[in-house]
Length: 624
Image (cartoon, rainbow, N blue to C red):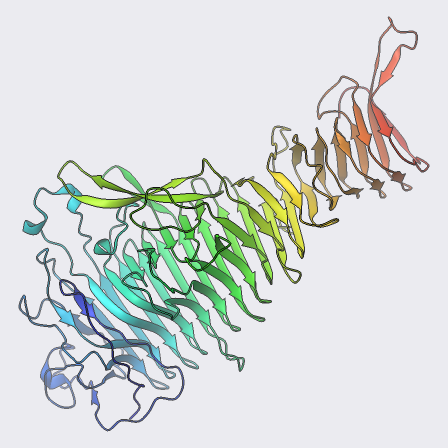
């Protein structure tokens, strides 16, 4: 039968339940003579019943264990079947537990546990592959979250044993299908360190080399790459191969669940996490929150050593932060640019959506425990591929820094609490490199239905050497929505502003912007200086009292000096040429003042260049 290539791994944590999981090699495994497989001879589905295994012995991971197929039944692995000091599943740490392996096979494993003592020394020593080599595997685990903050003596109270996995693979190999489901009661933001996690994994790889992998975290928690650093990637979601075999990986974090990647934030040489790489497709869904002990607990994911979304041509990576969930990213210690996340890298495609009240993406720079003051982070959308960031319906993206503060509660329980600080803001890059295409959508994406606005809290938006754009496609028609962030072109002509729907006001000096502004719908109100060129298409309106550059109006386009809804005559300045094509409109507000020699007063359009013929005039006497 088949087996995997072995690697020597040292177990170093003694007071946890350990599943030391080795990486599953996606290429054809080496055939080994020693093999033990599940046959359920007693018919009771009990994992530790020696009669249910081919060698009629209590299972250990001194050899590989195969649960090829469970015949539509579920094997039960109880962590409470052994005494306090004996390993639940002993082994030499060099072998693998396969759940659903080889084409046509399907297996299901349920890990069960009764809350036990605070200091647990039970071990499970080996590696795990859930759905591999064309098989289908399912693993389920429910944890009773230990919450020492609410008890007087933690050692006299119960909690679910924590499980340590050296490396977990879900859905590895062509036509493989893996599912791991973790359920619990929700994790607070202060429960940050690894001692709070039900699952701890040195490496987590989901959907690789033609496989399909899914991880559900509903009110539970999983931590990857936080124990110590190495020169291998600790997290991948949806990873293909150079030969074009795509993997598909999905993570759903719901009900106050939490995922932490490289959370100890001090690992030297750590390689950042990746979602969608080498023609793979990776999807991370964060949604919702729960109430626990009068505290709102967000479903959340934290990437403490950098994140790349959509890497290499043909790859797709996406993140959704919805309905009050939270995403935190921190720059890798090896990234001198302090960019906490790259969306769209090396011709790959990546996207992030932050939508809904209290939905939040916090981006920080280099971050280390236990320092209270750390570095400010930046974001790159469309670094060297195609990237998009959509912020809608009250969602917020904020670029600052994260510090760790040592806190004690009333019972004396202590922990490091992460505190985000955006008093100093980082920068957002759009289309940073020559081959980068980066888009920031406020509301909906261009070509999609408008949405309510979201907020971006950054120092400035920098349009890089590639193709960067910001799209305003929102539903705010009040005239009160003002976008105040600085817009800077890294080189002459770089950057595009697209006004698609809603009324958007620019009231700060944007003379450093030298790109182009396209109004295809709604109204853009310029109340200060806006550099670059301007074009106005059908259903689009330019208004305001500021100054814009060379402007072209196309058929159906409208220019209307003055503030929106104002009835007082005001002036808009064009610091360049004005071209009004046939069918375009010039809308003014006209009033009378009998005290003047010329009693008729209207809005003015001051052109500091050439003005080509105006074909159609449209006068309004009472606002716009």
